[in-house]
Image 1: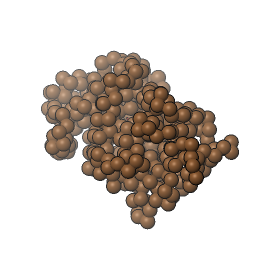
Image 2: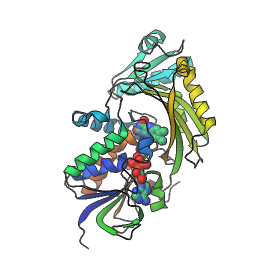
Image 3: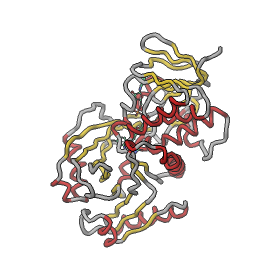
Image 4: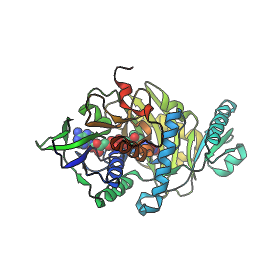
Length: 372
Ligand SMILES: Cc1cc2nc3c(=O)[nH]c(=O)nc-3n(C[C@H](O)[C@H](O)[C@H](O)COP(=O)(O)OP(=O)(O)OC[C@H]3O[C@@H](n4cnc5c(N)ncnc54)[C@H](O)[C@@H]3O)c2cc1C
């Protein structure tokens, strides 16, 4: 069969956009299809924190690689991407958490990440609105923040300049055997189909093991300088790793505009998109413990979104073993904005038969077939 297009990508969120950008840059013909608008899914609901995470070595490798790819693009960002290299401070409340803080610091140092431990006083000077006393903090200087919907527009615009076609308002109802079938009956043929449909990837490929994990966010009015870094409690990783139920963790982000984003919550088994007052108040109370003055600021909006969580908390990047034309780019949970560029790069390497820059076995979808 001869196909007009090399790759059809389903989903114009940050992951699909990063794939389209990478494929187009490497001279593959690309069509990206979304049932809605660009970045209308989890991407629009997210914080846009481009963060190094070290819950596992593969997670660290992917976040680190992708952060570098983002950083390399920085000069090209339009101003609406709101790149802000504010850094992250991980906060330790007590002496128990200081032990974990030191472990993290040692790990990051061993991997050449620019980081610094703050004692109680240095933390207070860095972030005067934090409660007192706190045991200490760990500054990771290279973490930064972007505005994800604008980043998607940027990536798709760059892909378009290189010939990619973007087709919105078209639902894909079936994929496989080098075809994507649209709800209006059109069949798009391609050498490769990439499933980047976020939490809905399982509807198109039912064998994928992945669950939606609901999250809430709140945005305040503008309070420039109220916090200066992205602030996270050390327990955030524990909340992200938990395998069931609901959890909240302190996570506050300063936007360049002066707004503050307040997170975060994680819930399995919560299908509705509504804001849940019980979860919201748990999340805000957690934030007030760390930033007491926050309760005197005005919140202007709250919303929810769904992370796509795999059982092993790693994304699915690569061929789907049951169909040689089908590739997955999904399952990024709470790190899809951070790891999108690496996902596009790794996927394109695989399709072109080029050795990727990092080991890719931990992300291959084949681990879900016949396994746990
Ligand atoms: C509250 C919250 C905060 C977060 N904060 C961060 C953060 O700070 N940093 C970070 O790195 N990550 C963060 N994340 C995670 C991040 O948002 C996701 O991992 C990422 O956006 C996933 O991108 P995606 O492109 O895979 O999915 P999505 O953005 O959901 O895009 C999927 C697209 O596929 C389309 N689609 C689905 N089905 C079909 C179909 N059948 N036909 C056509 N189109 C279809 C949808 O319309 C959608 O546009 C956060 C997530 C949440 C919920």
